[in-house]
Amino acid sequence: MKTTKKFTAAFLFALALFTFNGAKAQETASYDQGFRLGFGLNGGYSTEDPYKAAVGGDVRLQYDLTKRYSITLTTGYNHIFVSESDGKDLGFIPVKAGLKAFVWNDQFYLTGEAGAAFSVANNYNQTSLLLAPGIGYATKYIDISARYEHYSDFKTINNDGTPGQGFGQVALRLAYGFKL
Image (cartoon, rainbow, N blue to C red; front, side, top):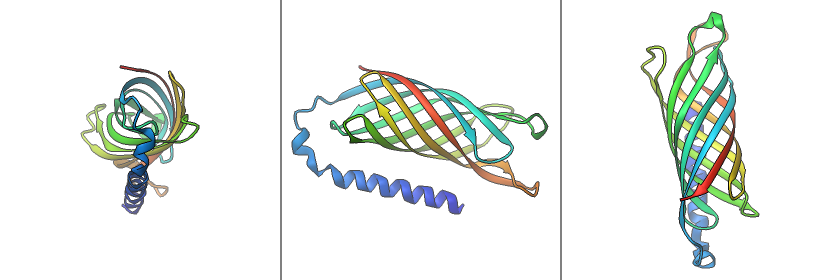
């Protein structure tokens, strides 16, 4: 629970920082706002047992508020594998909304997303809060990013073998995107 509060506080702080920094709207008044659509492939590794490697795909809709700031809406499917002796794999649909802020050369960015992960595999009927800060590099068509995702409500196994709750994963995303 403490970890979730820390991630929530960090996400809200970053969101506030980006919001207050938006006072430079006059210098980007001629920027052509618009939508972008991206399709990504994800690969990652879990930070807690029994989960191991993760793979997935996503679709991201992005609206450019200014040249430096965008809002995002992302969904897709992720599959996290477990070792054979530890149980069944976890499959879920993430639904996230976020903010993307370009911080250097209009290509390097920071992002923060929050949402829910809806379990869809193996009769595991759990929904989890999902927080995901990240960094990335984007060109006109290619988007490469690294992020940490924290799922506060999915079950884990503690070091002493007792059930736990909440885990994270470190993931990479490679995506192709275009203007709509």
